[in-house]
Image 1 (cartoon, rainbow, N blue to C red):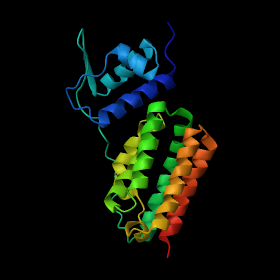
Image 2 (spheres, one colour; image 1 turned 45 degrees about the vertical axis):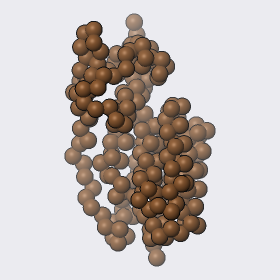
Image 3 (tube, helix red, strand yellow; image 1 turned 90 degrees about the vertical axis):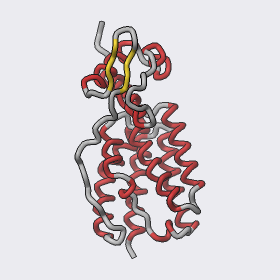
Image 4 (cartoon, rainbow, N blue to C red; image 1 turned 30 degrees about the vertical axis):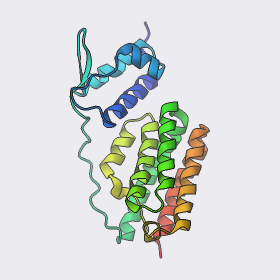
Length: 224
């Protein structure tokens, strides 16, 4: 029997890691092989390869006749950017440049690889962002969730892990947005919507361009 294609196996590893991050606690049993095959439309060989990778990473353990159980959340690593004060415009723009290098490619991969379930979650985060225009704290949460969901949809687990290591402080939040300026908020929402539309349409080049434009505009908005 031939080995499963690496991209199918890696995609399933990423999907399972997302399930773990979204609420599976240590000791919880993963779905059965047959259920995973049906849910993610993959072969039994792909499922077993993906679970083997999670076993090698110390994330799950499989017991004969019982199934696979989550042992611990994946290690987030030791990468740290450090605190960047909102008043440090040069520091925030430097962080946006770093994010551009990561998130443009992440958006392109998401347009190419995203699943129907991941697109549904991206729909939810965009709707949450639209509804949060009068609630700054909720807006920050929704903004971060939108970018993080794109990273998960890339099919490469390193993208979401990097964004999680940066945390919500990675977001550039000018006072015009935090102070409830509806026009400023609408412009940012429209930029998010363009990214969302490109990913929905599986348009890799448009997704990359839309993300690059959004982050470039975020940097421009920080300047007096």
